[in-house]
Length: 412
Image (cartoon, rainbow, N blue to C red):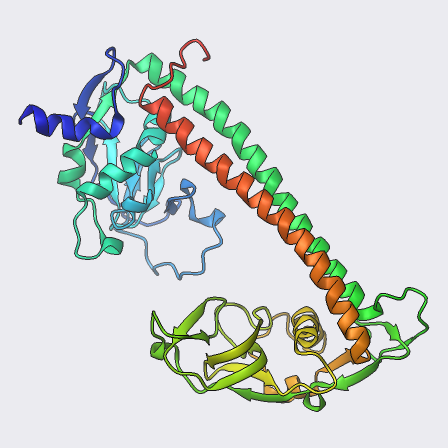
């Protein structure tokens, strides 16, 4: 191997300390091909977000195989790589024994190898090492790259003294825990802000802005009382209800018009069937029935299972959007014998009753909601930026520590 090739293999780490040595994965690890004969061991999940964790702790919707015999055995301290998703960082050193899919790679530390599991878990999942694995992965499509055992085992790897490996792992455990705590606090803040917004929307859609307005019964146990000047009106008297007539397969990546489908994602289309103000919700789909709503004003296309509400009269389109997205699901569930809704039927939507204020009051309520939502959106945006910066700092700290750019021996 030429010096230039060696420099390229080590380039991802920069200049590591001279007290560290360079080796190859095959000198530290050996591929383990041991498999389960009964399939009764703990099934482990491999994620780019959380590393190796029990699948039972995940909210997994994919159906597990009927039999797990033949799955690869994992010991605590083994490195597990999701061969197809290594380029995303789906790998890690397992803290517990279990089994993983036979499509995964399992690598066991060699006896007497200078291999601290905690240190190498951080190193293998660090941004520059994942990028190096991506560079060496093979595949026709960038989303289908695979890192094969022969390639992985031949990759260059820095080997600090074992005591320093432990010191780095301990240091990163402490520092990342602090950052993770900050991130969790900010995520809870976002949840609180979202709930505050939802609560404010619910309150004003039921009582308006005049706290002294006389009230009357709405006729709905869930809604309670509403201002006496408001009317409860079935949706069929407020707008036209129809559906789209396109399938998701007709979407075009660079289409000129938005294409509203059964999920939250908005696709694109080269054609449009609607032109004007509309509110949309899927009749079923992965986004969750009664959970996905869109408001749009202009030319657009809609999926054949998406309900489209147009031609509003007696109610502003955006006001209808707020009301439908806030109350459709809870009211529909309250009148159902089940705890979930698999689909929405047109008679239910046509008969769905809306608390309708006079149009001038609707305009004032919309102005208030726009103002309040803008304030909350700004707070959420600032919090999301803080989380992003914290995640970037976390990744940079890990990279600096596992490549020796910071000396943590005294800090440890």
